[in-house]
Image (cartoon, rainbow, N blue to C red; front, side):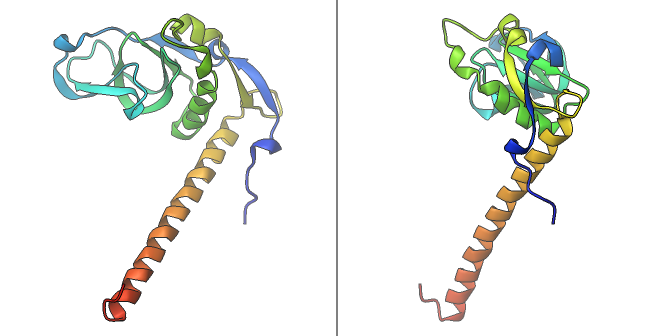
Amino acid sequence: MKNKLTLQDVEWKEFKIKDLFKIKRGKRLIEKNRHKGDVPYISATSSNNGITDFINNPLFIENNKLVVTTFCDSYYIEGNFTASDEITMLGNKNLNKYNGLFLSSMIKTNQSKYAFGRKAFTDRISTQIIMLPIDKNGNPNWQFMEDYIKQEEKEIVNKVVKYYQNRLDEIFKNVAGGGRH
């Protein structure tokens, strides 16, 4: 059995967002000008991974990026999407669903710095510092981040399966016992 990865088993280093990612800002498309469709429209909300609408007339299309709202909520968006001007989009060739989830949690650690009067606009996000695990060359350890999230996801899935298996066992036991509860 493979050893469990822990966050204490890797070296960490500070990185500025602008040194890791290609940074873009979204574009405003007011609600009355949006036409219903199937392209997720991301804006500054802390629910639904930032998705506030689905449209068919986006001003641009991005895909597979980290997004950061003006309140420093951060999400990895898999597939095509478009975004409002309240969104900073972060791209990197090493980015995927798993390390993206890891990175979004690291970006959110700076959330307390931002509020309505001090929003996390693109210029502030670009200079934000995050701590990341590093490889032997001092670069972000993309593979560790991916493997760590896969490990955590697998643990959660196993717990859910075990829970429902126990529930089913109880139900079958009660049915076999004449329906007593």
